[in-house]
Length: 95
Image (cartoon, rainbow, N blue to C red; front, side, top):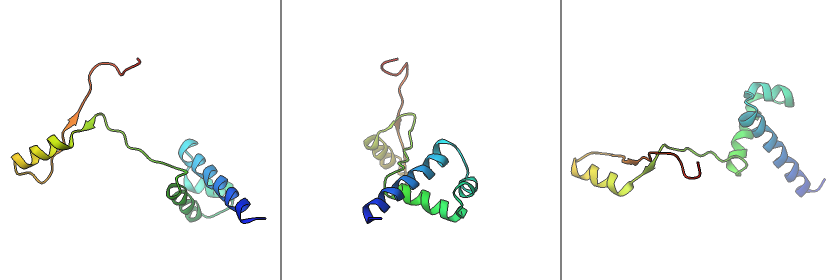
């Protein structure tokens, strides 16, 4: 088997493990049982899938942070940190 074929198979296997974990909501132990590997191997595969971009994790907040206003507020009140979040009322566009 060529190195390229091995990489493609590895990529597909990592994608499958990620799919089982993130989309099918199986735990690492169950995935390990299905694949005949250790739970530690599944953990390493999920970590690798994130590292190479198969899995991307985004955190969505209810609004947008206003960095400039946050900094001004922190300076004005002598705070270590301040976060000002713009929130949106009404229905989202297109609804």
